[in-house]
Length: 354
Ligand code: KG4
Ligand code: ZN
Image (cartoon, rainbow, N blue to C red; front, side, top):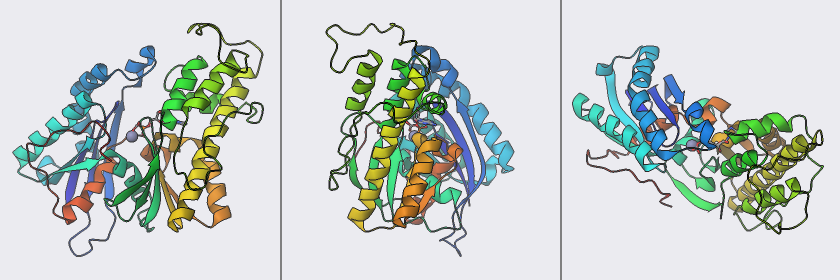
């Protein structure tokens, strides 16, 4: 069975075509026939972040060309599509509505089932898609994206139980905000990673929240962000005046690279340590990591070192499957196997529901 999958939760317009397992072999992992992503980065760059209304309108313009390209690259005709999947949560309301409306229209006109999927379950399922020959579940799932930093116990693709998450900023959000403080612009993650390559990660001692609290599977990145701001301003504590948003960073060569590297190292150490603590807490020896921040090479290296040291089976998808894409909505096959088809009057759920 061929599935058409749609992703419009934030600022990437994605459409994918997946080949599902046959009824005789329901355990097989779906195969990606095509996955097309149109980024909106250039539209949001000048605002320093994603502007929801601009994102929604860009999806309106891009969705049909992306759909056509995904079908063309897959070699599958629209009439061969057996189900339509769409991420309906969590995300930006206007952006989600575009994907859902296209998905409903296709499901209705093709007379095939509509399946709604959770974007976060999709991020973790990307690990299974990337390694079809490996067993991905049960596992500890760590989603690290622009909107979420959460740990789950995953007993299957659609059986995730939350273990804990961030109490303030998401890790990707911290990357984006710190990049803006350093004058690097948007998107922050890849720019900080690039600058950090030439920096000294041990130059600045930045805070690592809850690191030693083995039982506390929570994250906090807002203090780290503030510590970066104070370091930038050359002071140990809060400034007496509000910072000038446009004040130039100190010019000393290497300062910004060292600060970027020290910040990245602090985020990476916290994420990797909490993931290891979650495997100990659950007794699970498998870890799946998804979301845009998982594209970060330093994070991937540190995860691999930890996994080798602790004897954990690590699944982390290639970067293109970590950032937003529609192939990960292939998690819909697990829903179809349970008969979880959505009625055509469903709505989107922008907020995190659990
Ligand atoms: O999963 P994603 O594409 O979208 C959301 O669901 O949020 O994640 C986007 C986030 C952004 O905050 C971006 O800065 C971050 O992932 N990101 C990275 C890297 N690439 C993307 N963070 C650190 N290093 C990267 N290489
Ligand atoms: Zn995402």
